Length: 288
Image (spheres, rainbow, N blue to C red):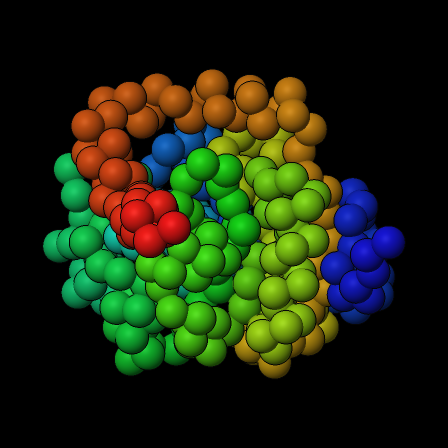
């Protein structure tokens, strides 16, 4: 039996959460500005109906946040981006201002993107975390213990010796409930957050509109700034459930057409990410 008082695996009830004085927010959601067909306006309208905040975290892209800022829909909007590092992990960066997000994107992400816009950029995890230090932002690692068969997720990368364990000290938080992961992965991520004294975040990693709000990060906050402060201070509660396997398959089918045109750069990036693990395996066989 695994128990964490600040991590609750059940369907979020935003009205009840707000009655407790907490602000709930889905901190991991994608739009048509990356590999989703969901329109920004539709995501904002649903978040407003649910009574939750929203972080638009498109892959290596900030234009979805810019579009959201121009919409007249009253939703606590967290300026975010999911950066795919060259060595495997996906870093969720949450900024206190849209202007800081855009400056970071233009100076560090845009020029390092590959031909495949949704795949790994030409910066490593340590390089990304170093460059974000000039900004007021929170760094959390998305799905830290997934995915199977891919050198993705900080836990797998550390285990494969392609990233040093000191990377944990440069993060503010780990995503302890990711809607696209299995329960076992999320529980392992929760254990890592405790072991390394990191904050906890959660989000759906949603690409389809109906997934929005299935996982929320909650804090005693009235503003986005206070919510991010709570993540930094490890004063959050994460509530949500993983999607059933059938729903994951539906999402995968919907996302696939966005990736197919970039199959070659995606495969190239994944081969590069897998090389350290392959080399380690070969050395162990030769030395054994």
